[in-house]
Image (tube, rainbow, N blue to C red; front, side, top):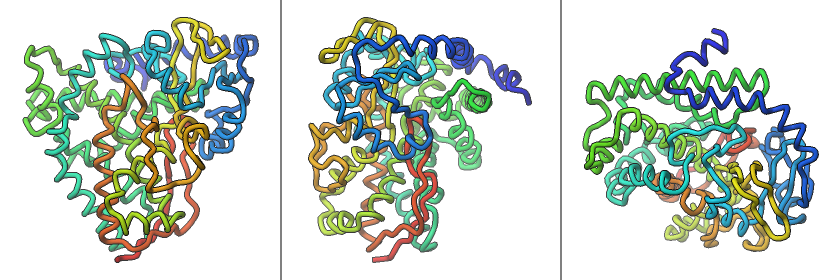
Length: 432
């Protein structure tokens, strides 16, 4: 099938994304040309998260950013970069000047999603979704989470040696999301495939292969929309025990349409699928390479919540997101011009040496309360409670049943420019 046919497929579902692709392809040359004369006071850098080697192992680059000034500028990408924790948190707060409404990736686009809105519209959309992530909702799904953790850790122990990405880190969050949405077991494999393809829309690049990948993501998004709307038309996925059913129960004015429910489901996928996989995979990598920290947690299980926060800091499942300025934005002595693309480097901010002692070390008993592993401010990730619950459940099961976690080979890390986690991590578990 040609790319154009993929784009036309399900056009209603993906029109905002299709428009964005066309706009960004047309703008690519202009962006690159103006980039070389757009620098006005920051420290020039060649740091580029689009570089696959850098994306897989960005930490040398982060240390170089920290040795420089507060604001960096990549002329080739026409991108301003903030890497200090204080500056990243400030930009996340200042939604009037540093906006999400033009997109949170290199590809500019808008859509009626909470992640792509600010101000009153963001508050309204977040209020619609919030009941699905309340304490009551989390409590009701605790049993599901613990059951999944028991099942998947048991499977790994039975195998003794396996790829933890394929056998736990990927299936745990996608099966959890499928369960809280009410996806029938017979549809989970299709749901997983569409979901994994759809979220890769975040990594658009204006190349032939990038366009092909984006077309595949659009096709997957269209397939998801068809599936959800078909389910909704027969009353599926709207039961009182599902996340969407909870939202409908709290939506007393009846304003939630099926299209809005679909967009909320997509938001849940973006917020809680690959990011949680990255967190879980990163956790196994950490404990395989720092057995003394795993022993510390086994000896002190009360450290589990803090250990997960430290894991979020040290591996940062979402390494960065973009914003766009809608006014001149001052950071120290540097003015970032109106209309600029700004990269907020969460991964670098979480290793800011001005905030964290020995920032490249994992310490299970550290309290990294300032980290931005789930963002900050109005756009704090809605899926954060669910991700924390899953990671804590897995770690509790491990400390009860596993005495040692060892890596069989070196970890292979993703090369996605924003989402970072292991893609291949053979692990051997020793039963306690």
